[in-house]
Length: 91
Length: 419
Figure 1 (tube, rainbow over the protein chains, first blue to last red):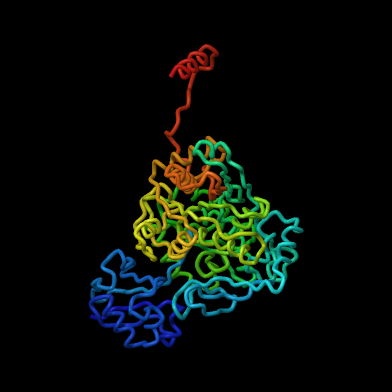
Figure 2: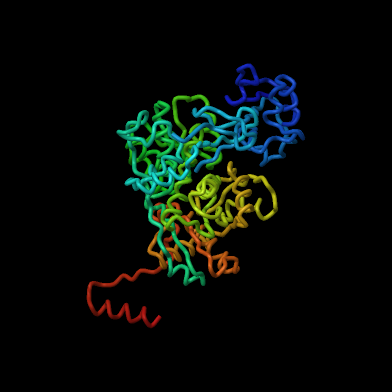
């Protein structure tokens, strides 16, 4: 059950420059755990001490914000794309 | 001159003054930090001596390395459109209608493209010149697109404007007319913003004013507060009411008041800050009401399209500042918005777009609930022009049509008078 995770430029220092990662998992939480297993430095950058996502981190499954789905419990189908992006203000 | 570096608002990590907007350590937003040296009052004297009427009279508090853009700048030779310098209008008839003592209207519709966005774009575009970018771009709910398109034309750089497909036609026309590249996205603003965040990572020669230029862009909104202070004779208001979409304007108005107060340029502290949202897109007002310190995103459905941001990046800070100043964040429905537009127009002669209707409706609501003290000096920030959202006032009044004869006129007006 491989999922493609898209890494934003601001986090690529923690992935050795990789812009994508292939990770196993059936929920967002499992995919993140798999991602952190590959790139240990990423954990502190996007999750806080208690393991929750930091408040300026946005995650999208197929373009939909996971906060409109089931949060980190959202099911991730095989072959799906998980995109990590910073929150941006504007208008 | 005074701008020093960028700093993460969350963890405090420092960065050079480059096209960066996100902390690599914690993903928090970056903000410009200034060093005003031993004598901050010198900056006030420079303002008082300045003959400039646009926002560059506040150059000491704006994040350019080479001074105001134009012929005198070392790095940004083109001046661009003059933003800011908008009127602060004493609105006695509006105050009277609401049973208040003193209300002022900061009319930012009086900017070159008729919204406050010319301020933020002026700063972002000038910094983009300094950094040598090849193009200006933005994700927009309309007003920002107008401002970026016009700035691109004035500066002679291509502009790319990304908008949701269901924007008001006036705002689309007032972008394309400047020769900008308009890209309409089949989605809402949050979809547009997500796409532009991805595009900006791949097009690093484009200055996305509200993405990779955000730390510079957002500083432009402080000048709303600076002008209010100057126009009140170097005094702070007691209360300020401003609309919230992403929360950037609201937090930077608070910052502008706070910055001058901390430096001792004006007596007192930031005023009570009230934020205004439309109930059809009220993630920040919802969080305020529930006591949360973060915003659960919403899918927008409101006539106030310029405020239709369901995932407000500066929402957490807007919550902090409203609470810290004893303020609130309110939501009003579409009928209240239309009534707000009419009330402002009929009592001040200022015709505002839907976002201004939201702000006036919140003023009315606070007045009705008795939350504004009798001796308060209140400033409301009107961010855009009513001509941009004409459709929402259609059907809110009657016009008389008659034959071209005096008798018809008398007959029609006597009927109207009787009615």
